[in-house]
Amino acid sequence: MKIGIVLMNLGGPTHEDNVRDFLYNLFSDEDIIKMGGGRMQNLFAKIIAKYRAPNVAEDYKEINGCPKGCTGNRHCLNRQNKVVSSCCSPINGLTERQRRALEKHFKNRLPDANINVYTCMRYWLPFADQTMEDMAEDGVTHAVLMPLYPQFSWTTTGSSFRDWETVRKEKYGDEAPWKEYHVKNYHLNEDYLKSLNDRIDESLEEMDEETRNKTHFIFSAHGTPLLEVRSGDPYTQEIKETMEAVMARREVKNSYWLSYQSRVGPQKWTQPNTEELVRRHLDYGIRNFLMIPIAFVTDHIETLYELEVELVEEMEEEGFQFENYKVMAGINDHPSYIKALADEALKRLSDVIGDDAGEQDGDIRENAATV
Image (cartoon, rainbow, N blue to C red; front, top):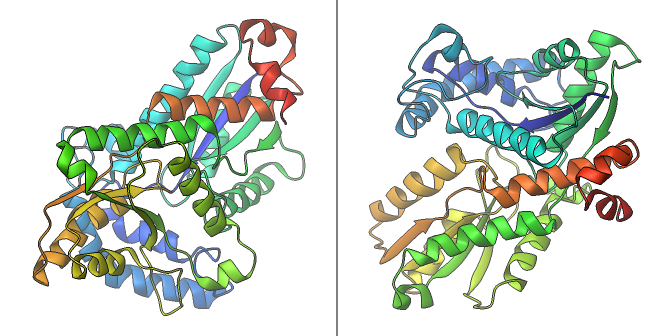
């Protein structure tokens, strides 16, 4: 038995020349923009990608994730061509760190098991077909699809699953060369919650006691159209459950709120908007904030640019002043988060792990009993 764990993430452009292609892939996704696919959606995606690409490229240059050379997956064109890019999304290198950390975790935890970890990006390299070719070459017999989205949404996890299934059927027909298992969500996994609280604590430790005591928590999640919420998408509810679970495990309860960022298009989105919520607090005289990216487990443009740079610049341009404004570091390859990913994968594999793996890892059977 050869097991493949597939980490699914958004991906991001790796060079200024492919920002436009990345945006096209994003806006042509009918799970993101509800236009029914087809020619009209493709035309819309081409227009919006062409219009937005120059400004988006400048944003990525400001947070370039690989200033000294490629840190991404082996399929990255920068790595293959030995190019040092000035416009690479940090999500690429950080997802590769998560992949390597998870593979190392499995080697230490189950040294006799044959487990490889792969990356599959939704909107940039490596795409699903490349990942499947790697898995087929390695002889994978059992695959666990592990989204790097703890909360389920049809626009993220659902889109990745749909794309994977479409590509797999095109390549292999109805009979996949491996048995597949899906991790739908893990928003209340204890180790995932611990990694969030550890990152919060790390941020607070950098403040003096007086600042800590008057710091307000703003949990910021990627917004979603209200149409999705009304259609039954569980994402918003699961975000709230994660936030409350995090705060329930904290001894000191700072004031906290939930907000949503990154809205696009004319549709009504989940409220309150992060920028508007911060502005409202500033109007009330609140000047100390810890921004907690609750739905982002890998730092990228939404955390490193929208929260750390853009929001601050906009508030200061409006004449507001902060006493202390800090964005929590992303979970990224935090050991507890890596353990959470491993545990969730092993739960799905509980019917095939067998006695040998059970002897190597005493908590597998305990995990399996909870499935």
